[in-house]
Length: 639
Ligand code: ADP
Image (cartoon, rainbow, N blue to C red; front, side):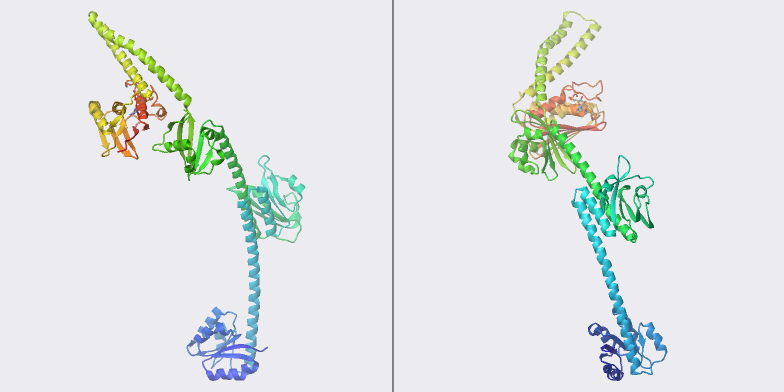
């Protein structure tokens, strides 16, 4: 066969011309002649010759450089070596440099044409093979793409579908399709019986699926569950190989959740002929992973849903109002009590931003108050006289829950109790004054012996203690009733300095240090100077009293956002956590107070009442054995 394109790369123009004219052209070949490695390298992609004939002498370099370049870029292009002055050894050189042939003298035209034809044939064979190989690779890639596509589809259905039945059926169908199996099934372990049942199937009879039960012991599927490893069975004769039905070939892969196998995904062939490969096993394992994820997702969803419903039930049944905001301050939850308390319109709420609650001024006011400084609960009175104890709690990763506990009834009880205590104290005051008076007169009525004098002293001490108690109770009654309304401009540092002067002998006696740290030019407070003095006197004398000798006491005052924040800290005995909620209650003393320490348990109640009558807030932070800090926040006067 002739007709084709030959590239001659020869340094000798005469030789090239002779080959072209006398041999190749008459045989119908188109010929291009080049004389350098460089030109041949550059032009070969453009010329696309069928065969290259290369001489050993080239103008710009050795022939083997060109051979190497052509082999690397055009491995299917046959190269024939044509040495000018040749002997037998050139045959070997041609072979070593990847040439398909070598033209040796005596050179006859027929020999040249036969060599060219052989080279073209080898090129044709090489090309056919590479086309077939490309086709094979394309088919393999197409199959892999189909498999990948099927896996992606299954993956998508796992993430987008909460209907477990649908997802598992899709998975079994994909398993059958991808492995070319006759049937497929998905077995799960039944918690109650410990047996395997068929959760999804393809090409099995419905009745068979419904009644199918397989023990774990001594079965193939059970073995996969127990070992957590897949199984590939390839039998030449059909067997009831511990599967409960006859099969030739079978793959079982486990459904793993963590380190535990919860089921098995299987495909099989009942008739012979088809075989499964490791590749099918890999595909099935990927599908089994999807199935395990879907089952676990469904389980978690059911549990979360149950938890959510339980939580909802708790929040609905609870007697306190509860409102929960997410991290973006959007309303997440609001129970019925909250809706009733603040007359909210339910449909209006969930998903709304906190700032949208301005439409409910009462609620929005309370929320603003509770978000102010400090984390403690606050008391608020609504327009209908209902009193609420409001607490805002940060819930990590969720947001913030605000609870509103109705304490109207307790406030009323407290008021009645205070009134009663106040009346009784008042009524006790007069007879007690009489007792004190007459006890004082006793020694004037005649000489007293030593024992009598001792008894009288004891009566006097006890009567004084009772008088102090009654005075404090009466004081408390007056503050709570709001009788001290003579407010004036008060400088907190001035008051504290006076108190510290007055208490100097007390703390120096115990070798305690007392450090004052006031921010420059603190704003004034609108308040009752006597009561404010009483407030800080109580806090400071407690700090001295409950701090052992050589301890440290400090008072710090700072202004912040229209408020003055005063902290009284000590390195004293601290307050046990169990007592901390009650220290502001009337007559309450913590369990770690030494028996000999004097006190009525009324000081902090008075302090709290004074703070509240000044529209302030107070709380204590204490670590047992390390010390206590009382923080008082009072509104300041605008300058
Ligand atoms: P008391 O007359 O007992 O001091 P208070 O009402 O002033 O009564 O205080 C109530 C209780 O709070 C005290 O009995 C004590 O247990 C505790 N307490 C108050 N201040 C301090 C403090 N600075 N350090 C430790 N405990 C304190």
